[in-house]
Amino acid sequence: MPVAGNKFYFVGKVPLPFCVLLCLLFVNTILMLLLPKATGGTLRWYEDNSITIQFVLLALLAVIVLIFRKRVHYIRRK
Figure 1 (tube, rainbow, N blue to C red):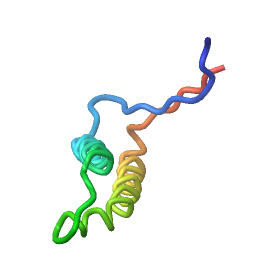
Figure 2: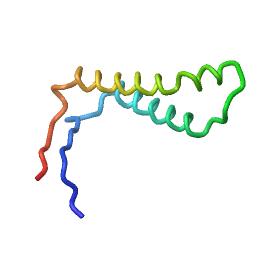
Figure 3: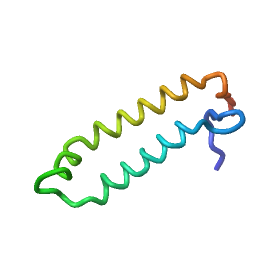
Figure 4: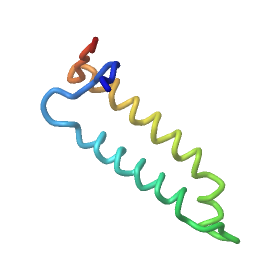
């Protein structure tokens, strides 16, 4: 089944901050899904703030794309 949509990609190498943030986003997602419920301490703080951390990482990814916007190209698919 053909997929309609748009595609954004970096020309040349992907910037290092983008790769780092993408890895942090992946690790944060895995930790949110796999960590057991915490009773106190640092894990409790992380459990309370993990969604906020997720959105901050997503916002930082968007900022990186805006900073490197001259290296981001767009392909329109039919």
